[in-house]
Length: 287
Ligand SMILES: NC(=O)c1ccc[n+]([C@@H]2O[C@H](COP(=O)([O-])OP(=O)(O)OC[C@H]3O[C@@H](n4cnc5c(N)ncnc54)[C@H](OP(=O)(O)O)[C@@H]3O)[C@@H](O)[C@H]2O)c1
Image 1 (cartoon, rainbow, N blue to C red):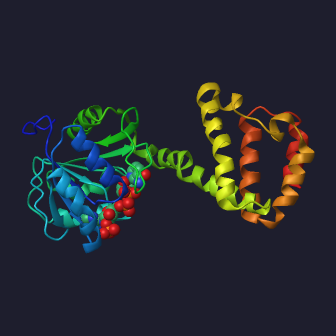
Image 2 (image 1 turned 30 degrees about the horizontal axis):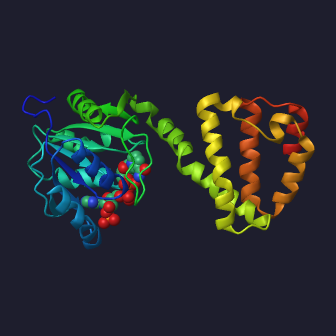
Image 3 (image 1 turned 135 degrees about the vertical axis):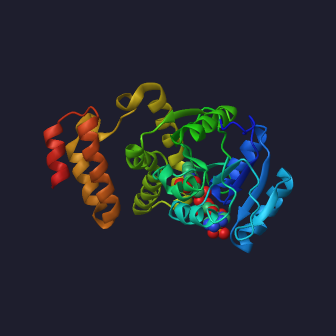
């Protein structure tokens, strides 16, 4: 912690989008004062109004900020982090302050312009999905930390107060770390929406398919958690039914995107999961 930094510094959130909204609420529940919320457009400022009232926070336009908080947490899109940091670096307020961003892929150097002006900086990325209309608990989730020692120390305390865990990510591993994260939620949703397209080819309506898919999808996660990937793996690949795989691929010819996903995932399964008749399955996937 910086010498002048209280145990629970006031926090300013810049960018009240998917993460910023959930973070502001959860930090307030953990006893932190959200002193200011910075928005860019009138539309986001309008959306922020109810929350700023609830949290008794100041609502600022990005060109007219106060930022008297000890910690400024940038929750803007990754492509905007360095630009917003450079804009904020024009202010002469950074000595003794800490700044976080929450990109999974970018490291703390994205905040170099603020570091130069005297701020301690870190990247603080929660391995969780944040979407509009849902505020997930932070309890038990993990934040990947990287940056200046004092900023990382402060991040550890805050994450602990949120009931979450931390691990230190080396800068050079952040891109691979975030690609992993992409598989854990956004690409899972992409796999599900691809499945919906295949259901339509089988004559089902999307809503009907979604309802029918949910029990098997949920049980798969239960099995994965309890039994691991090999124990949770069922279907024609584990049984070695290469004829069935060929039938699938013929049916999927009319949905080439879904066919490409099927082949890529089946190839990964042949490498990493237990299957019978590996050779025949490989031939079927090549055909
Ligand atoms: N969503 C997740 O699941 C998730 C998970 C982990 C980490 N993250 C990280 O969290 C960060 C934010 O992601 P997000 O998904 O929350 O994005 P988002 O929903 O698009 O929100 C970004 C917000 O930043 C605002 N903004 C842009 N420029 C600004 C500026 N100069 N001043 C003030 N506000 C500004 C945008 O407002 P306007 O619409 O008015 O431009 C928008 O409200 C990213 O670094 C991301 O990698 C996200």
